[in-house]
Image 1 (cartoon, rainbow, N blue to C red):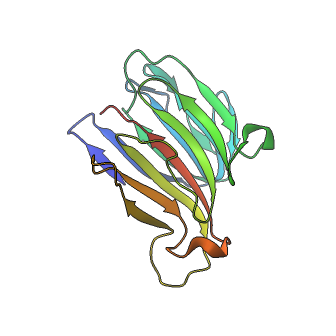
Image 2 (cartoon, rainbow, N blue to C red):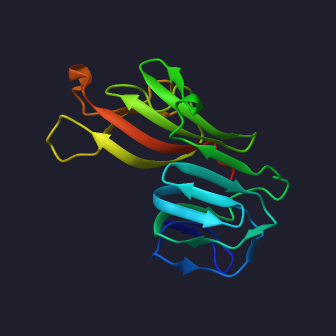
Image 3 (spheres, rainbow, N blue to C red):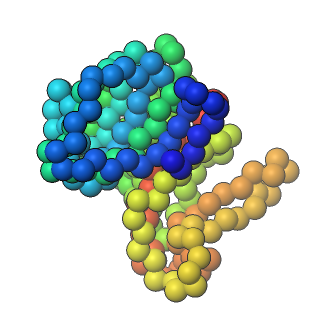
Length: 192
């Protein structure tokens, strides 16, 4: 479990490992479910989703998940508003899912008033948030950094706008070398 807010039926974020041949009975997701397949192939009665697939099942949806060969998934439960109705399936390995933004790339996954979800490929020194956000969750999926200080693949720069806002940048403090690269799942402007 990476994060849990509340007791009983609570908003939860975790990484789940499916052993080869794992099967679960049909079940509902009253608060919705969001999945990013990290490795292997995750399946349900609607299809097979290898590593890189993003799935979003709205509140009230249900499925019978399984994995023939095994899988590791990043999953979030109970984080959607009750009025959310969109079911989303995106293959993030498809180059057509990505858009160039500055020196990096973005793969939009979901957008609503309550939240924005995307994958980011950032070059060293590139801002994680091009615009101010009130809150965010960030999962670093891969990083290739040329700095060896053992620190985070991001660095933090305090805001100077009087609102105590901050900014995060990909790579080490000395990002001029330009070889730092980050792949991250970003969910911003959460209304919790």
